[in-house]
Length: 147
Image (cartoon, rainbow, N blue to C red; front, top):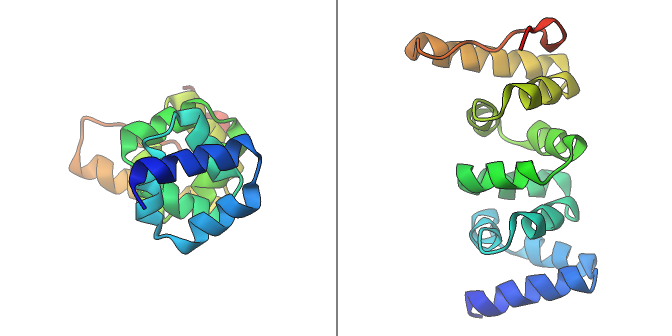
């Protein structure tokens, strides 16, 4: 099936609120292939796909989307949706994307993650900081951050 036809099918599933077919489609395709299709949608449409499928699968698909489109999707998502994506992303992908978020959103995401995951992001960010001294490390406690 041609990509344009698949994109039209995804849009039809969204318009019809046929989330079961949407879930089945995403589950039967490789996450990277679904990610390639999502970037042809609007950020709002991509967000809608991601929130109507399994959270783990949604995070896997999201981690295959290029960073600039990830940020566009984040921009149209609410804080709970963003936290859900982050908590299910692979640690390296999560840390890379986290560094690109605005500071206020970093604090929101950090505070919604379990302590172990927060520490993991802090450790990975600190390692990045050591290799790239032009960047600041992420505070361990977002509640006491002055950002």
